[in-house]
Length: 315
View 1 (cartoon, helix red, strand yellow):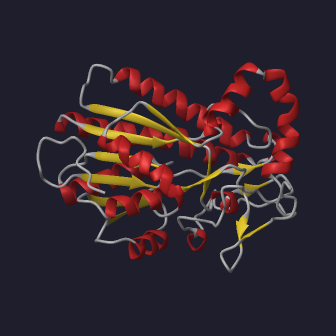
View 2 (tube, rainbow, N blue to C red):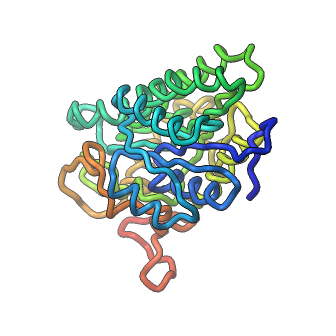
């Protein structure tokens, strides 16, 4: 895919993908690596960065960044500027997740889930917007979630993170209205075939699963790259988004009544698990990949590539 980022110069553009070692971030990195872009990928773990680089074409710049630490974010952006001299696009896909009632999730786990989305987005904007202004152009794409627009029980930490991130992005968009060539875009996918459900912390008693309908990470990555090329304020990706948001907004009593049982039947339908923090407090590089084998219908592919039911899946 050719990518030009609407730039005046024909010099190769520079794009930084934060969270570029797994899921949507890795899929986005793969699309960009196959284009004429000079690519940098950032993540909090060096091993994950090395594994991702080995899977990508070209020679991306690897930058270790912890989104919850403003000094780390500043150092990461400085490293990209030192190497390439400019940054034309930044894609923020990094996020962690934890299942469980709000009262059951430990404070340190809850805080990191929220900080990764809200403080992480603020730290990136604080560092990259001045760079964009000096250049006269630039695009920040924030990958959010359907759960920025609806609420579900036993995912309160993730809801808080994504609702706060949505408010922050909307404020940034309004603050930048007078700056024609500087853009902040929001991409809100529904369920995506990524490892996040396996990596999530769990304080709900059951392992999480991708709720159908599930789209490939590459589909979301395509929407991200299209925002870099032709910026749009907000893009939804997923066949269930409109219906879910409509039910949440306009059928609120019914939605509230059935949400808990649906979450248990469709999301928390995996095997029983002990309480654990998943990858929230520390990266687990060996679990990182673009796909986790989820089908459109929310089933898991077996070793032979054929779908197989997980225990408790809808029939």
